[in-house]
Image 1 (cartoon, rainbow, N blue to C red):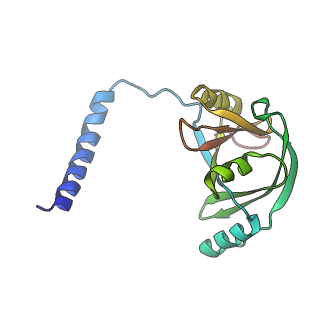
Image 2 (cartoon, rainbow, N blue to C red):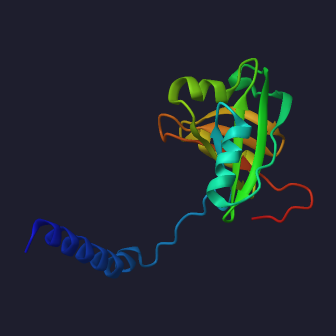
Image 3 (cartoon, rainbow, N blue to C red):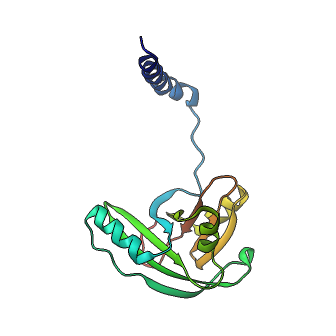
Length: 179
């Protein structure tokens, strides 16, 4: 038997044993409800050029790319200096996923900070949750830093060094279904 075949066989055996034994070990133990229970809202990217990136995504998935729009004067929470930020922004749908593109403009903002550290890339993942404040407080309790509040029903929480990602959590909005 080759090393590759042994690895494949070991992986399959581990999967089968895990599938069989896990219910036995967890019998009677219900998982605690998560403050992050909800649905995926979007995957957001910090980029140098929103329109150029949107055109590339559109080309890959065969969808029309909308034009970005500037958003100015959005307040940061006290944990991020209680300042305002400016960004060029767009959202587009492809294959059932919402892509959010964020291009930092003048002044301080979390996207500029992210790009200085990591370059262009996935900045955050957005989730619709039952209660954004509860989810934010939960994430802060795990070591996250509340970095932005785009509205009273949403918050960005940077999870580094606990996790290499920022989460954006959204609570219910008027006329929106609860997760």
